[in-house]
Length: 147
Image (cartoon, rainbow, N blue to C red; front, side, top):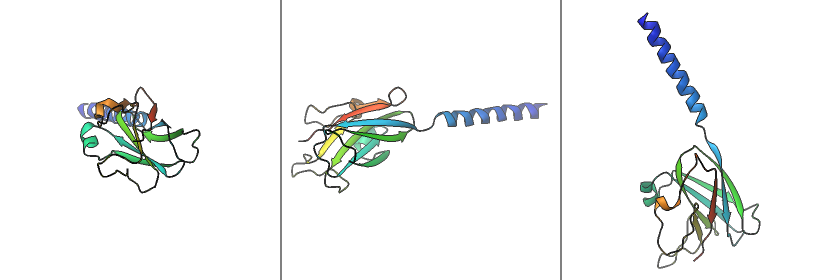
């Protein structure tokens, strides 16, 4: 009797995990990038999960997009991510070298932006300034800033 009860409970828990895993799947996230000045190059979208990875500049995921489909400086990007809290940064990689180019005093020469945050000062924002919760928000806006 005890063996069949334990087996039934384990089977029920296993089925619950399977249903939960199928429920928490990647969802399509729409990122609207505005203020792009040139159709040349690529857009690099970095996704960070926490402050530590952001400070270390080690993104959880990186997506690269061609600028085909750009209209009046606006481009809509789509990527698949599991629900959770993320911070998005983007680089307008105009020369397609895969990184943000900076001048001698470390000021970016190419455009950059952060999810739902527009940089007003010359200070790098904290992760909490631009993090978004994809459980409640599936559309993100990024406005490109050029120095």
